[in-house]
Each structure stands twice: as structure tokens, then as C-alpha cells.
Length: 372
Image 1 (cartoon, rainbow, N blue to C red):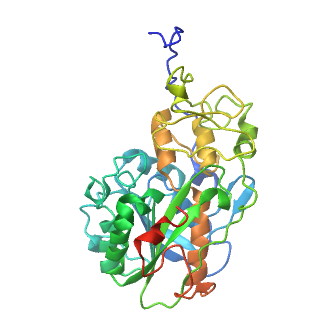
Image 2 (cartoon, rainbow, N blue to C red; image 1 turned 45 degrees about the vertical axis):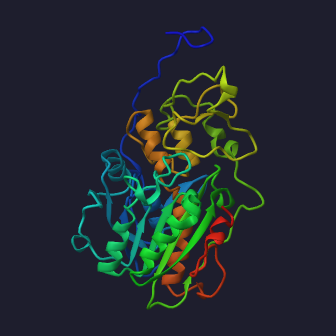
Image 3 (cartoon, rainbow, N blue to C red; image 1 turned 90 degrees about the vertical axis):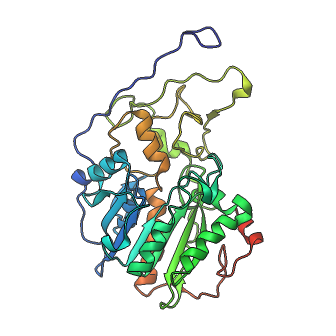
């Protein structure tokens, strides 16, 4: 079979990575870097563990050590086997296969903190945009049922920014109302990830809830890189000369030619001195080429751009790995949010509920367009 330009098509390599153990084998969990209480945490829709790794901390990426946070993941739930196997390989055995849509909250352990990046496909700008009526649009209610039964002190939900735009913001409003009906006050943190050191164009909404009997509220983190982004070439330059498994997952990438018609639709070439395009779960639909090399980004490069440490292994074929990476919460963003939650729970940096934020406790549709 030939391409449109007449040249023969090249088959994609379906190689598997080479590795001996995952992150947990090389960097065992340790006690918190700072003495004090560890807050028991339950994770829903945990995926491969990006947010969980961020909340626990104790990892290194981009030459920076991200200290241990005072959170202990006592249970993590997902129903995707690839995600669970990757989680157990790298983080811990607390990851369990569970259909959260059918799960009874009383069967889950009680915790101080509940976290969960509930499925975003029905709210994504690149998805069906079916909202709450979609196949997975009601899965956020799993968090609400847990809140009703176990009453965690703090809840952290995560989703795509388009959730704030769909139906004029009414879907986001409905979710927040359902959460607050369980006796919580919620705010939405609109996190522009490059402003916090992530070398890719990514924005996410974090839904932060505090039980109503607790005073104050966590402070939204202040940007660390607002005036000087960490760029794609700064993040990946040391991988340019490596094409094999000296760094795990670096040999895995799709063979792809550039579009010869349609104005290059689907082709995106990253540029030096800028952040990368957003890393997506469906890598076939958004082709990203390296800023200097004539090929697509590797699995390891995508993982690096999502802030996974190089010792965090993705054990499957290319597309299966890229799906896990694209669906994940970047660990350094999870770590950032966890720091604010920890400071609040430990009695530091509590913000008054009347202070301004991205979305007020009393919300209106016009506010949902702010900074989105």
C-alpha cells in the first residue's frame, strides 16, 4: 500500500518497552519529609496514578525533587486493567478494579480526603460533548455518594476546562450543586499548567470542596512560571540522542508521515522555546512531531511532558501507553494542589470563604467564562 505521495507506507513498530521493575522498586515509599499526621486518602478514577503520585510526592522530574506530602492513598479504584497494572507496577497494590457506577459507598474505606478525576470524555472539546446525558456523564455521582456516606474533610475533583463551557456552564453548575447538597462548599480552581512549570499547553479545572463544619478554605496555588514557561526543548533535550531503551519507553513511537493535503490538518510540530502541544489520550487524532527530529514524540517524551519521572514505567504497546499518559493528571500539578490541601488541613494558609476565586460559591453563568 502506498501513501498519497506515492511512497510506500511504513509499518508502525509494535515493540514493548524493556524494564526491570517500576518506580516503586527504585524509589520505595518513605515517611513524609516533614513530621506530622498522614491524611488517609481514597482515589476514584485513579487511572495510572498521576494525581495519586502527586498527592503522595517523593519523586523527581525535571531535575527537581518533589517532597513527600502528608497523604497516604489507602485505596485507589478504576476499571481499566491497563491503568491498574501500571499503577501497581509503579505506585502500590492499593489499586483495585471496581465499577464505581455500581459500587456502594459503604463498602469503601473511610478517608480524610477524597480525590478523583472523573471521566472527561463527555465534557471534552474533542469528545462527543454529550455532557451529563453521555454514557459516562453521571459518573461524578460516585464522589457524591462517597461524600454522603463517609463525610471526608476535603474533596478534590478534576476535569477538562470545556466542562465550564458546555451548555453555558450549566453542567458544571449542576455537578457543583450536587456536591454541595452533601454538606460541602465548593470552589473551582482553573489551573493553567504552563504557569506552574508543566512544559505543555494544558489547562484543567480542579473542583475543591470542604465540609461545611470546617472553617476556612485552601488557598489556590500562586503561579510559579507565569513569566517564564518551562519549554519543550528544556524538558526533552537530553533524550534527543537516545533512540533505544536506555531510557524506558524511549524507543516507542508511531511511524507517521506529514499530511500532504488538507493544509496539514492533524499535524503539529512542536517549537523550541515554547511549551508543547497538549498531550492527548488519542494520539492518532492529534499528531505531534518532535521540535528537532523528523519523527513523532516517543512514549517517554510524552510521559516526560506530563511530568512522570523516567522511572515510572508504561509497560504496554505504544497506543495503550499513550492513552494512559494522555488521560492522567500531571503529577507535578497533583503535587501542587496537594500542597494547598495539606496546608489547609494542617492549619496553615486557610483562605476566608469570602475571598475571591475563579468561581464563587454563589455562581452565575457569566462567571464560567472567566479565564477559560
